[in-house]
Length: 175
Image 1 (cartoon, rainbow, N blue to C red):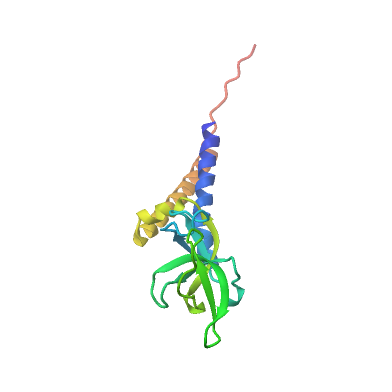
Image 2 (image 1 turned 90 degrees about the vertical axis):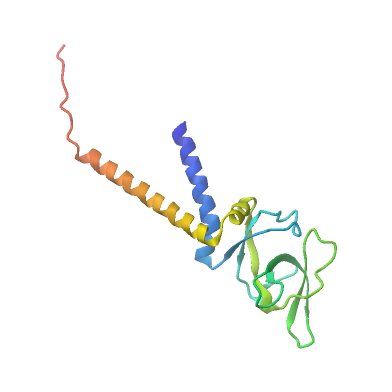
């Protein structure tokens, strides 16, 4: 029973790390943590959202997008697209609104501000993201990877040791 439980815990840990770290790295996506309640109930504070790059032409009404509040600045917001239009120069712009907000955002979003669309979300996992700095995330990833490699090497060596160990002579008792 303990063996089954340990395999389940290991499987869950691998799935979480895969969804939160591996898949975003392989696809060019970015994991981000929801800090406010403006997108509740879809994305509660503490939810980890994975944002993948998207072309402005592919954004549609109803899509949750992550965008810079001001072009070139690091602060980002995730809100839903509630309208698509064009500004005075003919550039496509998006009207956005948080699901929990009563009115749309005052300033339209330009394509250059868009960082991507929400691909998927993992509730509560973002809370761990808040607790640690980027350097600590990197360190924990390396320690976890090192631990997995050490475990794998230990399993291989133990299997090899068992194969090379001489068999103990068996004693037969005549009846």
